[in-house]
Picture 1 (cartoon, rainbow, N blue to C red):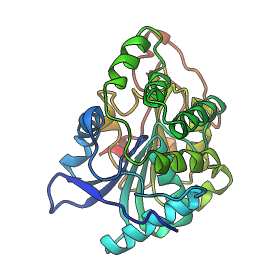
Picture 2 (spheres, rainbow, N blue to C red; picture 1 turned 120 degrees about the vertical axis):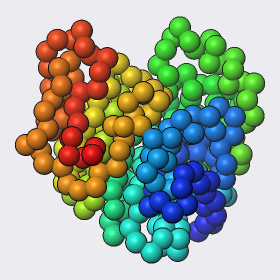
Picture 3 (cartoon, rainbow, N blue to C red; picture 1 turned 135 degrees about the horizontal axis):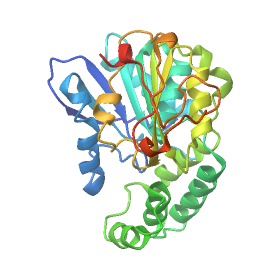
Length: 297
């Protein structure tokens, strides 16, 4: 299939171990632009202290009708050619979907996995929003970026400002290729294959994520054999990777977490439950729910 070009942008010490960062939508090929470039630098600033971060966008000229498995295969080719050993993978949003597909189909290429603001499939609201986004892209509507941004932030008060600002930004490069990726994610669902992921994993979620609701994220963490789950209860989809704690909480797992050492924090959710279980003292709900201290050393 076409779409085999995967340029990367590097951050951090060239001598440090590699970490491959998979962007969320619009997931521009090559170098991120505008606000996306700023947020990318914020997101990778923590991992770049210990790793050489290789930020990767969507494949250039992705063919219509591509599946998420075919998309992941393209990343697998890049990983095999670029790195001699399995690499740490961190994905955000749609990038997290690609990361999960990659870890399921090519577990030998993934040494550790961070799934941020993502899950093993889209939620119903997220799927509907992305279908509308794909339709707007196909129609050449300049409001496509605005509508997606408003949904990711989930803030009615900020919606008018977000629409105004995003309409002033340049549109995505190769909108048809972007639409092909959005449509590929529409069919993405690896819930029944999570047991194939052999790497230690960390799922980081927002309690108000419109695209990947907390229950789906918790089910994803529960289905991964060696996973921990961090929850920011009051964060929307866009706010997960920009949380002040993400640079620390998103520290890559170096060895499998011991589930018996997970101590849920007050005001959060029990990490290892198959469904979210509310804890006490909601006044502290702005904090993250829990994490494996062993995972984050």
